[in-house]
Image 1 (cartoon, rainbow, N blue to C red):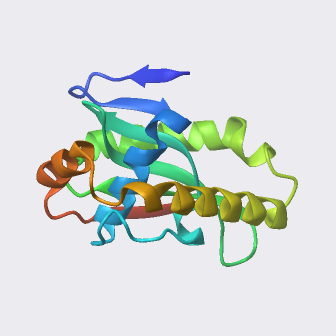
Image 2: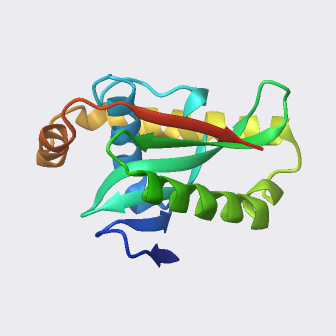
Amino acid sequence: MENSRNNLGNYQVKEVTVSNIRSIKFFYNQFLGRNNGYALDESFGLPFTSLEKDGHCFGFASLIVDDKSNISYQIILAKEIDLGLKQYFENISKIKYDRSQSNLFKDAKHLESGIKRTVNWLNLNSTANINTSTYSIKQKKQYGEQGGIVLKGS
């Protein structure tokens, strides 16, 4: 797994894997003001890069199909992320998107299918442990009120 360290605190930019997707899902639901048991939909996209600190997600970039049916990406960040870190994460995400992520799918329909399958898997995976783990309780205390920034690129 590729990790990028920067000199802005203890944040790390990480590739998305099975081991950190749960934290990303939790962050996304908190970002939208929903509890962790809330089912995801296709607006979640297909995450490919995350911003983490101490094992907690503070933002992510995901592949999406935009309003014009093109493959694109979105960046979702917690509101407490400062401007320098925001710009750093935006740059890294764009580079990763440009280098390889957009080439993983032959067209928008192929990506839509991948997003639907991933979202269905995450929704199935979460029904067995809705808000019962210590992990969820710790994250709820840490995140509190969420909110933040949504950016879209192409």
